[in-house]
Length: 115
Length: 115
Image (cartoon, rainbow over all chains, first blue to last red; front, side, top):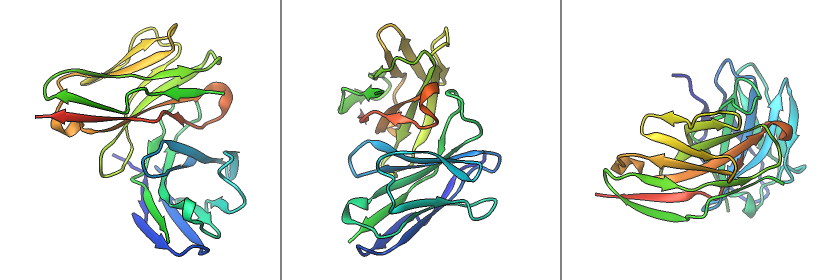
């Protein structure tokens, strides 16, 4: 069964460093998402991406964040200058369409630790 | 603004018994979808079940069923015949037609199944 994959599973970085989190969505899906989950808290939406551009973003997704689909399979989230509060689990998700009934399938997550 | 509330931060259930996890939501949109995800201790988000706002019948998927009460704006997850492997965090989430593609999550319920 096709699944969303994410690399790395765990990333440790120093405050102020840039990190790139990578995702490979399910191959026939058209809509891609990033969510984050700070330890012990709810899952929060960051950004959605369709047709090579951002379709929606939350207040969390400020200028420090960017997303890109550099080729036909990868979808990346870049944090330019990490802060301590960026420590969280980051989930990539994808869905074939954007109807309310279309399930978003999540990857296993990347745990980001900022020291 | 839309809101998802899960009032049970933690619950215990005896193995082989049924358990109900509560979820209430708040929206004025007529078209929306409700999702439940399971998050085991390994961290991944696993889709369990979906209920559409226009669905006449409650959704079922194996041992999972959704007790959908539209007038009360509740979408409780029922797990029948609990198994030890059901011990996990469970998140209720909503997607609205007039709110783009994002999922809004509740705070989650930690279910612990006792042998």
